[in-house]
Image 1 (cartoon, one colour):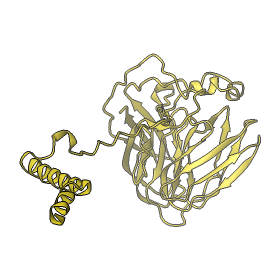
Image 2: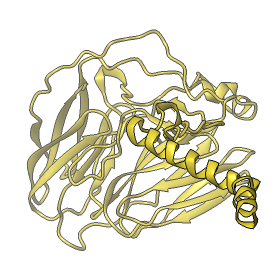
Image 3: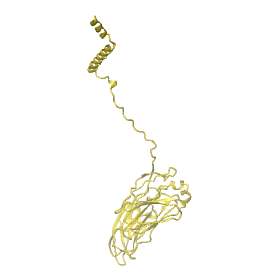
Image 4: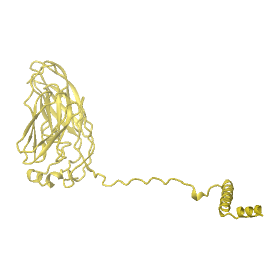
Length: 328
């Protein structure tokens, strides 16, 4: 009697029944997934990372620069258009009626003896250069407009005078005896009417030169030298003059005003004093004092490139040279 009652109570115990059911469910699930595998929709795949959204990207205004120098041993700035951050209200330049450039072939330099013992001559441009562009930023700027007088300023890629005379060409003796000649008066680079004057200048290595602000408002002068130590300073007052010097020979050091980015000028730094920059007629005269001998006389221009010729000078015997450069 006692045995039968214990067996019945054990079979009907709810806890034992629950355990048995769980074991049975586990066995059934194991057999099912072993044969079918996990359902595809339950397989975890990482979601692709979304592309980040960049906001407030900088806006760049494309400003076409004036040409860059070329020449023997030059650190040549790139004459192509470059991106600069310019104030939206100041349009650096506006296009004029398109005048296509007409290239030409330049003749070889013509050398003749001069009885005055000087080295002088003229540089002519062959071909038709493209029309220069009006620098609209000057007249549209609230300060530069009133300060600018005369005709609307333009770019100065090719400045050609009467009879094809080419301005702003550098003419120099490439190599001269050490100590020969004397440095000319230190050049002055002026800022007037939001333009640099002159556009091209030259200075002797180690010779101080001056930069002046002739406007009534602030300019800043940044020198992008490659071989020399550059500089960047502000000139806030009318009539302010700063003196600078370069210690290494370098052609085409670019000067630019960061306040008015169309303001450009170039300074050549040379090893000997026998050089000149052509005037508005394309004419040049080198300083006196070059010892007798044979020399290489070189002309280089920001756009038209470089040409050289051999000359000979002596006592009372100079050289008159006619150069031709061509539109490129």
